[in-house]
Amino acid sequence: MRNSISFRLYGNYALFTDPLTKMGGEKYSYHIPTYQAIKGIVESIYWKPTLLMVVDKIRVMKPIKMESKGVRPIEYGKGKNTLAHYTYLQDVEYQVQAHFEFNFHRSDLAFDRNEHKHHNILKRALNVGGRRDIFLGTRECQGYVEPCEFGEGTGYYDDYGDIHFGTMIHGLNYPDETGGQHLEVRLWNPLMTNGYIQFLRPEECQLVRQVKEMDVKPFDQDHLESVDELFTQIKGEMRS
Image: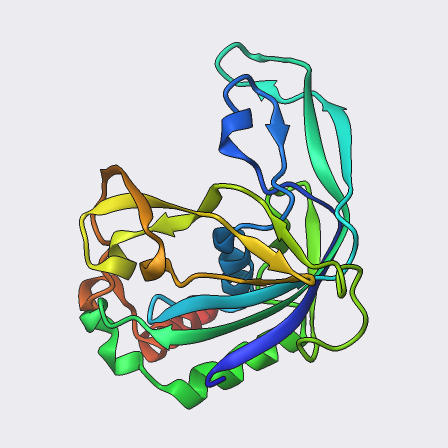
């Protein structure tokens, strides 16, 4: 696929939190990653507001196992700790295929639509493990990425058939990605077939609900700084 990458994603623990379990202070992970979680990982590899990262599909390589842990989250309003139980996914590994498209809702960034440049930067960033830290759902779950050929190797669910996961979060719609004026949440009903999950594109999700009003963050000339001007400024500060 054009402008695509495929990579191996793995870690000791993951917590793709089901929001229904957060009300009482407990957290319970979905059995599979959400589209938004994988999209965030791709953006941790390389991100610019010029681009829209699209997750095509994932492959679950290892058996789905859960582990509960007692943790002490800080209650900032009360200034003390409390006790809670979080249920994590244990020893996870996925293969991911994703690609980028230009964000045509950002006309202020039309000058940066250089497909060849961004694809090469994306591949170089993947080769070194990403530009930012990789987290599997939450910050305490460190993840790692490395290039791979999507579909290679043997997965635990290769001949397992279909598994339904019910209704779960797909992701979030932000105004700068949709051209709207609201933050929205998307729901869907994922199906895993022999370990493979084909994600719906965000605009294909039928269950969409508004969360709140939100404005687009501007990236016009008033919010950008020339690299040459910045370099000149740094040189002047170093001399002084």
